[in-house]
Image (cartoon, rainbow, N blue to C red):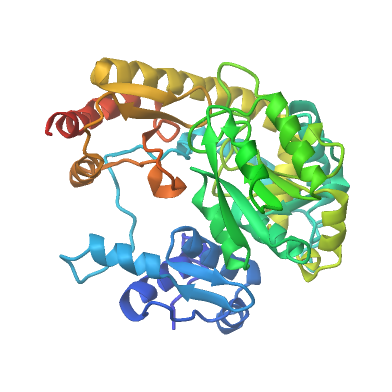
Length: 461
């Protein structure tokens, strides 16, 4: 039994996630099945969303794997990495390590969140008129969907309205929903390699065959895709993850034409389009589609907060029809209070002001990171991706570089670094120098400290 306290500061889904994680490390074996979401929700008197959030986090971190129509099982990958990395200690510490400098490439500093405004709007929407006695709309609150539609039409050229938008609680939720809905029509899934590792794991869990497709300077290699059996393809065309490549319009049209010709589906992940610092991003691929073969994914995680767990999808009408016929359409995926607060945040113009502010601030951080890399690493590194998002990617100028030594030295000296291969596969390797989680004035000091271990890894051959 897990001890969960609704009055405790950490939210219930975090408490549950930490308790299950400790249980997995201490008591479970590879392949052991976790209790069903419904059973855990009933046993601990929790909402289904609370338990799903805890399981989704365990899945995202590799502790468990999902098997179609079966449930969640302890992952072999987790046990492999756990026993390789932790052979000196038999104790488990579930508290995240507090690093001196953390270069995580997809986070914002806590001071960047508009907390004062959010609290005021939260209190504003929690009124007697809000019906907390009924189930919220499964597709998402209409006011929020309308606000998102207006924003996407004006900023990204997305062709949409509130009726073809679904509010989700993040990337995995969005991908799992598409995987379930499209299963009756498709069997073969393709993804950019290197690319975001979670994407193919979701579709693999639902029984799709996986087709890795290469990436070049213009993004996904369309000719390679055409030669595959893929009927669904997941891409990040505006800011390829992790290489930073942008797919030109000509290639986008070529990709759409191919997928239309086979009756396929493109999943366009526009995960950080708000954070472009030099040029406006190319309008969405979805806006170019005339044949309803693109599902568009977006998120509030990169520009506002990953903690509120809000994402959204714009689906073609045939996929939306399948959604409305499914059981998933009956239950909201994000809490009513969060949806109403975010809707008001957007309706009153705070979202647009926040975007302008966060883009200016992160552009300064981006420049500070470039300056610090030039100052402290000099000609020992090359920048291979920059100009957007929350990280700059660097590689050594020497072919002889010990990546593992760099990782170990940084960890031993309380610095968290992140390598591209860890979450993207393929042969592309780089250090993802995240700057979003730092205060502006911290970046130079952080890179100066990092440079000590970069230099050692670079020189000792």
